[in-house]
Length: 217
Image (cartoon, one colour):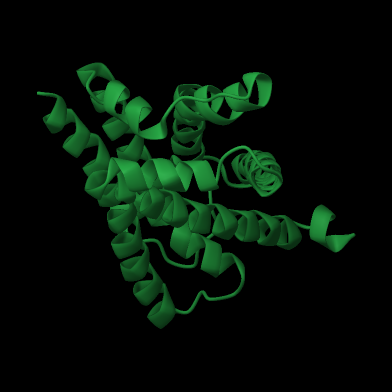
């Protein structure tokens, strides 16, 4: 099947899974921002998205999206390294400002994945998993307050968001190039949109961390 065996098909799969994860990031950021304005409303959102069948289905779908994206990113990275040495993605014209990011997408992705495991332990494990096992889970707002009162976690999470910003700034426009939007005009537009979108996501996530840290002082 060409979708699985060809380089173009693999890029398409990685692009679609990447788009799915980008949409999830946007949703997750929006959900987190609720906590800045009202911890009660945030707990209500967490309860709505808590221990129920649609939350479990959503978790499984999200996990599948991550696995697919990681597997195909690994396959394409190995292929690109073998075919073109240090280059990671095939693009028609790459500005000097994105060369470092494009050459280190896999490393940035590994950093994002590593901190995702930490994030799952800090929140998902203590909320959904604990609820599935015992029927009781901790308050999402309390977990946020406790975690970001710790300056070590504040620095770690902000560093994670920086890595995510770099990964998104390249991955966003590269995703569209993989499906054929590779003209010079659209390249510049997509590059601008990707920078704006990545910055919004970064600021949204970072705001929650900074606000709760300042509240703890």
